[in-house]
Length: 510
Ligand code: NOJ
Ligand code: CA
Image 1 (cartoon, rainbow, N blue to C red):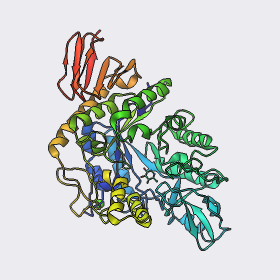
Image 2 (cartoon, rainbow, N blue to C red; image 1 turned 90 degrees about the horizontal axis):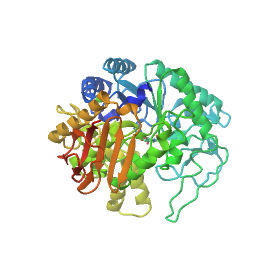
Image 3 (spheres, helix red, strand yellow; image 1 turned 180 degrees about the vertical axis):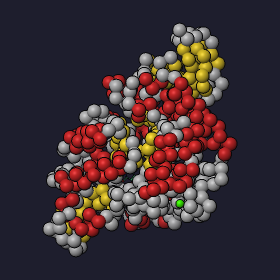
Image 4 (tube, rainbow, N blue to C red; image 1 turned 45 degrees about the vertical axis):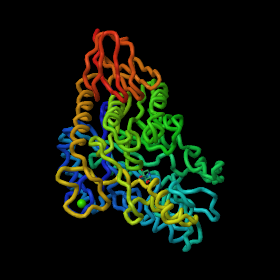
């Protein structure tokens, strides 16, 4: 038997947007706890909570100011513990985001470090007298002048998110304490934020710039020693017990992504070249590459949404239910660990802020300011910001009774409950099927791509996904029984006719 996480469907909960329990317009543990029966009904086995630690929320919690507490917006430590206990009672495990590449500039460690060049915490961060050309991943310079001690500190994201120096052994030991603290609270593992970005170097060569004038992030991630550091992190957590680690790797190259997954690294890593693509065209090709790379028994991750990208309903499904269902079938039946993004199981759509005032995401607001500074008009700047803002996927969950009794922290998207019911039923049936069949115990017995048609066999099941126009194929499997389909499929012993965007699972007879 494999590890528990190899059979688990995870569900990402964006903390501020899932369910408000106290009427202040922000999601919290009280609300979350009320919705555990919903999650159990859907059938998921694990939730990933985005950061709930105290934070000034420049980047909505990805700027942690205290690693050992719960932000009062989300409730108390007791609320979190009650949530974990109840989720576990429903058979749901809980993993949490761990943001250990950087801390908030309001964190006590940085407050102490910035006081003097000989502060005991000085070396916990990365300082330079002269900055190189590195840009932050949100745009703009990655170095910020700190007037008191007249040096620049390094921040790979917003200037309020200062990078930790992972060469410093005290930092590493402190982070082990952080891991221990949360595992003792009953968490089942971690999602490690931008974990290949850890600063390990003392050399700061300029990054190259491409023909479009865009910086190519080469030297500011995957630094020398990163493989060993990843192995050390993975090993440390594994030593503590039967925990699960998933790494967010800031790269879109499968070779960079897969090398950190497995026994010499974290359990699994996210592949953004699969999950965050902007059209359906590349999906089948990338999945083919994944099944080759992971044929050695390790597992890829499967997802089409997160809090950092536009919702798959708009980005990949063009607002069409049968396409959204086809993607769901792929995600929940292919070989890998699936991550459903909250609301995706209802066909939730993007929220596009119509002004910069309605924008909440630091990345969108940064983009707006940078465009204005570059001489663009307010309208032009807004368009760029609307494209870049991650607010799109952060609007509140569609609950029949509403998300909150009060005014929500971010704009809402009008719900379509009929669509939600149909989508939910489809997801639920797929997740249930995984439990009654042997999907999870097998890799692929066969995996075939014929143009835009993808077919694979796992155990006794044949999955057909038609990414193109109506397709008729020879029935090579003989005795087929349809188990679940998103459209009407016509088949007999000789042929199978699949309409455009059809997705079907057959049981294959002997
Ligand atoms: C990745 C997170 O998913 C994103 O939301 C955040 O802004 C960056 N890491 C920085 O922590
Ligand atoms: Ca609240």
